[in-house]
Image (tube, rainbow, N blue to C red; front, top):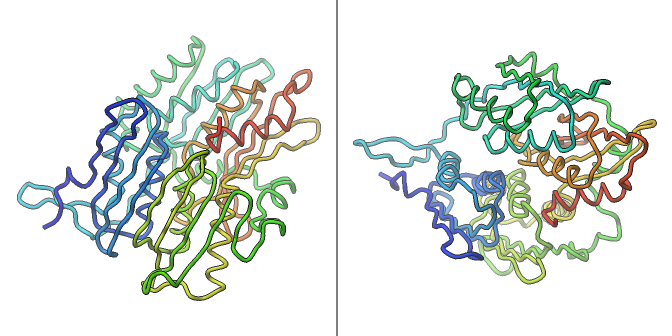
Length: 412
């Protein structure tokens, strides 16, 4: 037996403006489930303003209070959240959840190719359509020809697993054509093999500005302290308040995907949350109390392990992204990087936010590449955007860097 399929995820929509929608998840537990759920909520453009997590290691009960877009498809969100929970079986025609997990089948990769006249904000408009269609961008190669046309290559996967069908392909092409509004546009979508995907990898060369500065996982000495605090982040671990758990108390400034950043870090360290509470306070401050255990079910007593986890949490909360603007010969390049989960999943909507920030700031995009690179002991998703300066970059570089950072952090 188990819990009825429809009761695994319950969404109670906000009744009044300013209220939060409440999402309740009740299912078998697994390490990293909280991370997977937060990632889906972030993908739908929602912010978690409060959260409660409780589990006995076998079954979990999670409640999220979320706010965000008015046009959210709650039924689709519910479906995606259910899919992230341990798989279901059917007994006597009634669907129940079971704890056995099946390894997910790798999604087919498709190449979206199109050519059209360039215009300001074009890349963001395309990215917005793909996001609304639940098409995940894995790699991008964008270039502009001398005659003002763009040739764009997007390597994508379909969350709905329907892009191999003619209807889904035709719908995608139609929606892109409507948004682009260019009668001379050509669009093509085709399934590609692993050898084509491998050849599409971005250039392995990275400027020293990123490899030496932007990927430095260690915080400056001025931020190091015995209690793992800085002006905006406090991470404190305590083993005295619970006989079986380590208590992690975090106080920090809120940002887009904050709970996801914490959950993915704990998932990468194979840490399980037995009980947790998250809430946002005045002036954008957030407070979290997390009772955690290691994979062996024991609290963290090794000082070195405590220091390592505390340092990584603080780093991820202070710098969930790396953003810089550098010179590449006569050109100006925007570089953005974010860490990839050990499971191989990247952060959702990063390219969407980058292109939106640039559309608002004004500079045009001459070319863009998205690829993954192993730097140190971690894999990073790196976005390289070559800006079209024309007769001179009208927007100061520090303004571009700050504007993109604020958009990614949700502070716009």
